[in-house]
Amino acid sequence: MKIRRILATAVAAAVTTPVLLLSVTPAFADDKPAAQTQEKPSLAELEKAAAAAKAAYDDAVAAESAAYAALEALASDTTPLALAAAAAEAEAAAAATAKADADQAVTDAQAVLDALPEDATEEQRIAAEATLTEAETAAVAAGEAEAAADAKVVEAYDALDDERVAAARKLVQAQKATEAALADKNAADEALEKAKEEAAEEGEDGEEGEGDEGCVLEPRLTTVLTGLPSTVVAGTKVDLNLRVTNGTDKTMDEVLPFAYIHASDRSGLNDIDDLVHLQWLSASSSKWKTVDNERFMDGISPLKAGAHADVKMRLTIDASAPAGDGVTFVAGDYRNDDGACGGSPDLEGYEFLIAAAGSKPTKTDDAKAGTTPDLKPQSGTSAGPVTGTLAATGSSSTSQLALASGAALAIGAGAVFVVRRRETGSHA
Image (cartoon, rainbow, N blue to C red):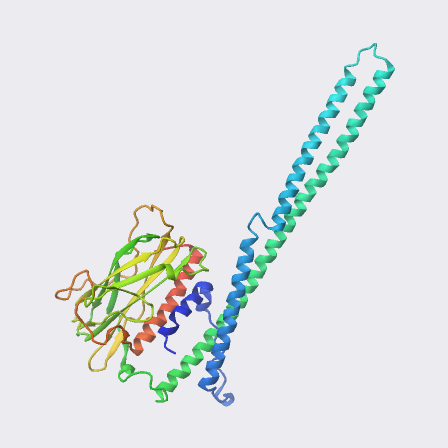
């Protein structure tokens, strides 16, 4: 399985429970002493195990989403228990009014009795005293009714709180189940990928081309994205520039820029990738091409030592996108005519906020990542489309290092991005 082919799925998993990607338990690892090792499972068995683990993980994610939705629903004022609590409050308010009226009746009856003249008849005095006694009895009853109504309010809100606490506990249990399922899934995927790599090294899998075995990490091949503000308003378009720099002392026959973008709403649970569009412009065509998170952009051939080339890009966010968070990763790989190849050891990540359509955020600085040396521009390059001679192979070209150091690191970087966003709320 190509790592780039599972990139989108892996990052989606990071969004749902990102911290888990940083603490996977290798359940499928062979950690037994040599004397106790068993026969290795076949590729078919590992593929079956990986499929089963993925299905279990998908079920766990669905259960967690349902638990989260149930907890959110309980925050509404229209749930049965919330309505019952509101009704109890209304009943308590009515009881309080009745108690106040009864107390006033006692006060009025006492005033009438006190105001009787000295020559009042015995019959008048008896009647006034009876009225006062009746009012006092009614006031006592009203007080008891008020106390009972107040108790119902407490009971109703206790029931509502208990239901919400129970829903929160279910969500925590669902999250733990997702964590366990994700650990199993990652371990199964890792075991399968390891088996495939071993099969390829033994010549049992001819999927990779010749010359890929010599790929190395090259930190002096850098990619820097400029023009991306720290906040982008939905419904707007932002012009960007990706600068690819060959900081080595040798010409790279073909350099392949790579970009990946991911976004989610503010909860971090729902991705909105379909509402966020990152595009690039090829020097061979005036038509914008959309980054699909799997393939390289057109190659730059060649990129001389100490030179750089620029790729014109743009980011568009649909007006329907909710407020959320986004991140763009960039990297670059190279391949020489003699079969040597390499690439960036990791991806540069640029985080940005997504503001709802119509927002007018204050002026913000550009999103920033790592720095890159100030090297001389390649002759004829500028901030525009991919410059230099485009490779005939186009965007379909890949290398073993690209799969390992590009897409694989995007998965880990995506997880770190979401973890930091959730734990601290910080943004570049």
